[in-house]
Length: 84
Image (cartoon, helix red, strand yellow):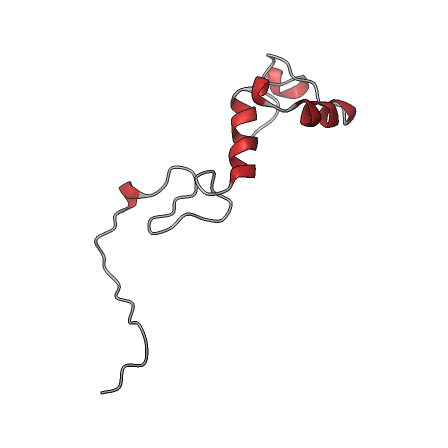
């Protein structure tokens, strides 16, 4: 029998509990996962801690009207009128 190339075997030894908490990947991460994509990791980190943002990014966001504050929301969501 001729060998046509590498053979990939499938195994059911992976379980949902071993999935990545960010992308739910079991065997490999998604391209947008913070574990493999540095740009996505940076965006995730500045959401958790805005002080890690670069000056250039802060300037761009400020010029677009973004305001960082301790308020979680303003307007209708404060009164519970907005459903998610």
